Length: 500
View 1 (cartoon, rainbow, N blue to C red):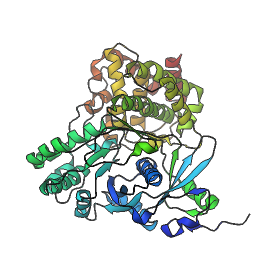
View 2 (view 1 turned 90 degrees about the horizontal axis):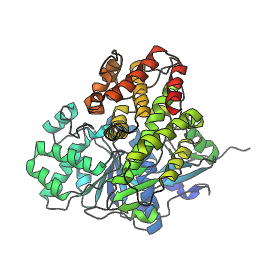
View 3 (view 1 turned 60 degrees about the vertical axis):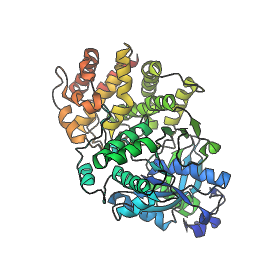
View 4 (view 1 turned 135 degrees about the horizontal axis):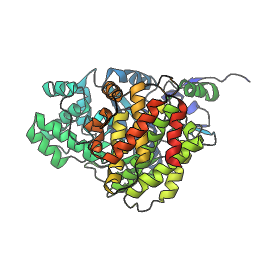
């Protein structure tokens, strides 16, 4: 078989790409930049950027191109790669039957690096053509205590930004500086749109931004509180980390040189409250859903999908599995997840108009089990301190109030304690632990679990859980079992105990 003629991904080569690669259906030279987006990672590129590309191709409305922004030196690699590719990248949609749909996304128009020149980013946000500033900065990036909802002013970067508002490090400083320009010019503010997996993500963004702004300028804070729109949204699309084999597949099988493609599942969902101050793309024409109140939808997704990921991530990691599909193929873990969703989550969910909950849960099992996604448990367990606090603990709290079930959650948190203490699975193999609180949790997890265990005293994660004797008793029992018999079978015994 003759080798393929490999082409670099750029505007010049778009028309020469193979027929099995979908390319933008619009003239990219005519695209205006209506959105500035902070946090151009895999999820943004598989979700909002995809929706926007689809929207522009479907409608011909080219006012909504996206200028990407990175704030840290670590974002330079992404900037350089996208810049060399004319801000194009390949989205590899992996179907469960093994088929891969390759699509070049053209909605990105630029990429600015804040650490090089903060003012350029601030000016771009404040520019007249910018209607929306959107965010995917991960749960940890919001710099707030999930248990109290309060902004963390002790963060050294926050202290720096308050002292040097002209050269911020964190996104809050950039947003406040750009909004200040808009206010002083007598202009309507841009909408701030969170696209992160945080319940009431718009409300959270509003609260922390106003708190930060109040420390700098009380009048500006009042104006932001009164004038700026922060629509809540629920976002969903499983997007694993790009691997070298993904890059090689495009090169050897398609003949396309893309230095940083994105892989994702076929499923995607975006439910958005329709509150935008300067207009927005009609994303609903390409599958998004605008609603008056996103709360029940985001609660469903966070408590089932995100918490389900965390449950399997912890248990699967300790058992020695590497990917989420391995966990779901194990009938014991699949039964554990099903029982968790049916008995602990479903009873505390609000009414969901237009949603078949049984079908949604079945779809989750199918999505998690997609053998072509290979979503790494190390990615799923990233920043677990934020994820457990946001995705899992609220369900436990509600079940404690209503005298519901919580033992599966208790085992998951006990497994996290072991994970945090040992940084290894139960066979002794090292695990990659990447969490802002990793050192603190490591020390607490290694302390004896008599009485109220030290691990549960982290109020920013667990709130008042240590006050509930029943939960603490189950948690301690599971922790004792995991640590007393450091073998894979001790975890499986605990799992089997709660599913039988």
